[in-house]
Length: 222
Image (cartoon, rainbow, N blue to C red; front, side, top):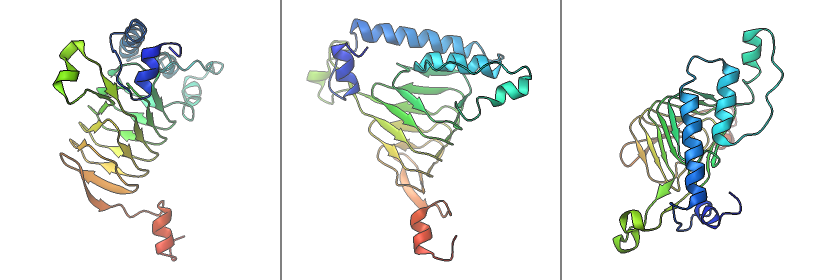
């Protein structure tokens, strides 16, 4: 994909032609990989990790099989997220997820540009990450005949995103924040804040000893 002109424009957030042969081939690959993952609901953790890595293009070799099933499952606790299908991802190789993260069922990801999820993040069911955009000018947009674009999405460590929340292109959700269920996140969320609504607005700051700024303002907290 690195040699595809339209792919490079897409991941750079420029207008690109979505029907490019290389882009469509990767979308087809990812769709098949998601279907295989979704069909493996009752498979072992090892097999599901293998299928997950197929979706995102992670070529790391799996560790040797441990004879004890529980111990074998534990091998992946600190290397891969836990993903509960079904899921739908557009390209896969633009989607990066940290260890210790839980992605609940019915996740939808349009990873036109890079979408990164940090460590120890929790997603409720039916979360949508919309990294794709279209031109606002209909003369440029032209339905299926016109170009598309996208922007990156970043969800930092220790975030909780409630069920049925939508995160739009270009948004960064700061470390330790919470997004209320059903929210539509249209702009950046500061670290350690709770946002909710459509569009999502800051409701309050989250008081936590994890926040270094809070600790500096309160010397008694250690």
